[in-house]
Length: 243
Image (cartoon, rainbow, N blue to C red):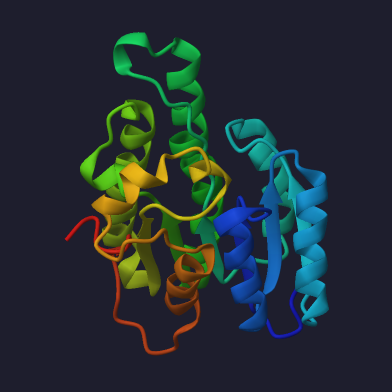
């Protein structure tokens, strides 16, 4: 339990955008429950950064595509403490043209990016409803808004997250639980390292990639701003790629 009573559960918080979100929230006064799959070194580094600013960090290693593994990791914690904030940042990409996409490429992305949302959010939202407060921020993608060739699986999953978050917002708003989506465009991370910059930059009005911290700043606002009337919204952080 946080000394201040403020706890943020960040799913997929060890690297990239997730790490930037964790760092922002820690500096805002949140203790962190940091979930990750199997990159223990990255998780330990992020945890050390949280502790360096005087906050507590609990590491949770599990495969959120597995309902059983997710329940085993979260339910013991939820019996004693409900996080104030849930940030769902998990996601993998297995890009391919649909005509050549394998069953594994489709299943892996949908199970992690979309089933993982259900596996994590259901037990957490139940406790938030009982407490009648909470904030949920879902990290989707520009691909879920406009679609991208070679990403039928990824676009389907990220679009599904937007639909799920909007529906959830209608369900829980009266319980003083805020649900919103942050939708990044092309952000400088490991996932975008292989993109041909000379072809991508002309498509971005700001003519540069975004940074993880720019995404995290929007998430921080949605999690920590005390005067909140933003609910059920999709906020793009994409440099103008979708206007």
